[in-house]
Length: 173
Image 1 (cartoon, one colour):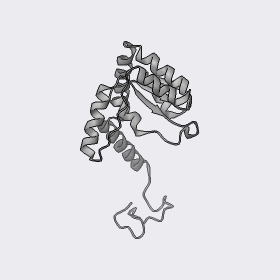
Image 2: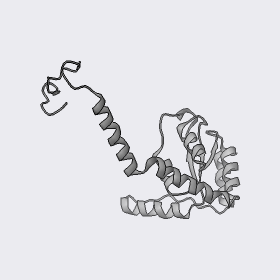
Image 3: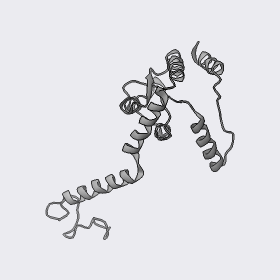
Image 4: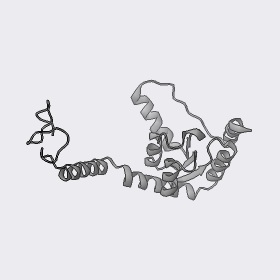
């Protein structure tokens, strides 16, 4: 019953649970990369009360690693939306250990579906969170915002002078 049965089920299916005990960043990063490379699937769990308070960065890492995600969380959360939209995994109800265990067992037994989900997850991560694309998008948004603002004193309510400088900040507009 509960997490104990899930853990025992993992043991019966010969899963390994790896918890690095090293504090050195490079060693931990190396272990993480090797562990992800060896994983058949990955898990993301959140408490029912979390909802959309956080979007764990590990979700990006898992999708980018090309591994299917089994997510135990609120169905209305942003993580659930991303996993479903990407077609990168399975979402189960938060804190429902039996549903989580069933999803893990089902996905472990579906050797054709796992690689497809992993490929979809990686493609989604690249399309939505590629560093170069994000930086370019942010730059374009900032340029558009700057172009749409009138920095003249006549139309400004921020106290800027005629050149658009803020008081006490001669180089800030």
